[in-house]
Length: 122
Image (tube, rainbow, N blue to C red; front, side, top):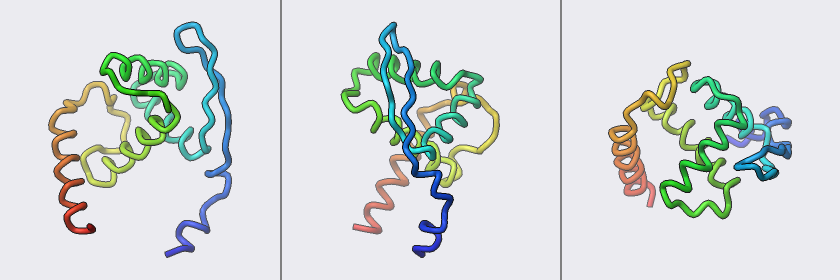
C-alpha cells in the first residue's frame, strides 16, 4: 500500500504560494501543487480563471455565513470533496460546468455515503 503513495511524483506535495486579489485586497494562498492542479480543473469546468473561481468561493462562503478564517483549509477540503464525489460516481470528470448541477441531491447522497462509511469503519 505504501508504494502507491510514496511512489507518486514528489512535485505533487511541493508547496506553492500564489497571490491574488479578493475584494481589492491582495492575499497569498499556500497550497501543495496537487491542490493547485485540482482547483485548476474545477475552474476549467466552469470556464473561469483560477483566481476568479477562488474569489467566487470566498464570497459564496461569506454569503453562506461560513467561518472561513482558515480559507486555505477550506480550499483543500473543496478539492478533496470534488475528487471524492468523482470517486463515488456522483460527479463525472468531464467539462460539464459544476454551476449547472443540482447540488441538493448530490449533497444528500454524499451525506448518506459518509454516514454509511462511518458506521462501517468506526
